[in-house]
Length: 414
Image 1 (cartoon, rainbow, N blue to C red):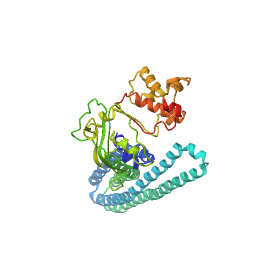
Image 2 (image 1 turned 30 degrees about the vertical axis):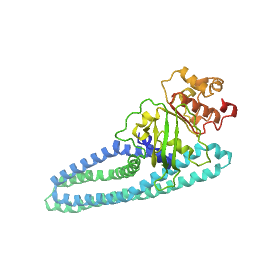
Image 3 (image 1 turned 45 degrees about the vertical axis):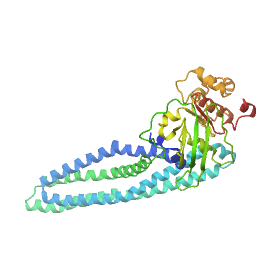
Image 4 (image 1 turned 60 degrees about the horizontal axis):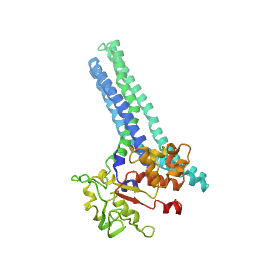
C-alpha cells in the first residue's frame, strides 16, 4: 500500500528489483522471526531462568560460578550480533542488486538477444551473484566459530562443577545425587545458549531487513493531499496553467519557467516542441503526478491541490507515451479503469479507438490473452487498446502523450 501511495518522483529514483526484494525477501525474514524466532527466544529465556532457579536451590555457591559463565557467553554473543547485523544488511542489498540485474535482463530480453549480448548479461549476473556468495561465505565463517565456542564453554563449566563439586562430595557437604542433578540443570541452562546461534541468525537478519522495510515505510511522498482537500465536483474541463514553473529536484534546473495558458471545454490543444522541452511535464502536472514548484494548475478555476487525488484523476483520461498493458484479456485491459463496464461499453470504446476491427480478427476476440506487458500485440495495437482504456472512462479531460507514435498514418487520422 505504501509503495502504491508514493509519488512518481520516488519511483523515478527507485529500482524495481530493489522494491521487489524489500516487499518479498525482507518481509519474509521479518515474518520468519516474528513467527518462529520470537517464540524460540521466549522459550529459551524461560528455560534458562527456570534452570537457574533450580541450580540455586540445589547449591548456590556452584550456581554463582555457572551464572557468571552464562552471562559471559551471552555478552559475547551480543557483541558478535551487533557486529554481524550490518553484514546481513549488505546481504539484502546485494540480493537486491542481483534482482535488479535479473529484472532488467528479463524485461529487456528481446534487446539482449537482438544485440547478441547474452554473454555480457551472464557475466553481469555472475558478478552480482559472486558478491552475494562472498558476503554469505563471510557470515558463514563467523557462525562456524559459534558452536565450537559454546560446546567448549559448556564442557569447561561441567569440568569445573565436577572439580569443585567432587571436592564437596568428598568433604560430605554435597551428595553425589545432588551434584549429578546440578550438572543436569546446568546443561538445561546451557541448552538455550545453544539455541542462541539460530535465534541470533534470525534476529540479525530480521533486524537488517526491518531497517530496509522502514526505509520504504518512512519515505515521504512529494505529492500529498491537503487536510482541507475536498472531492472535485463534476467538471466541465477548463484547464489552466497560471505562471507555472517546475523542477524535478529541489535544486535542479527549471524544466518549465513561468508557463501560462488555458484550454477551454471542447477545445483540442496540441503542445509542440523539441524533445525535452517539457511537453510531458506539463501533462503530468494536471493530474498531480508531480506538484508545481511555483504557480498553480487549475481545473474549472479550482487549484488541483485543493481536490482529493482520487476525485481529480477519476475525471481525467490519460494515455502515456509508453504503453503498459497487464497480463489478462483484451477486455480486462480496456476495462482496467472501469471494471464494472458492460461489454457494449467496452466495444464502443474499442470502436472509437479504431481497435475493434483487429480485436475481432483474433479467435477469442475480446477474451484474447495479451501476455505479460502485452508482448503478443504490436506497438500500434497496444496503443489503441490504451486509448480505448482511457475513452471508456468518458473523461471530461483527455490527455494523449504522443499516443499514436506506433500507429499508421491512416488509422491515426481516423
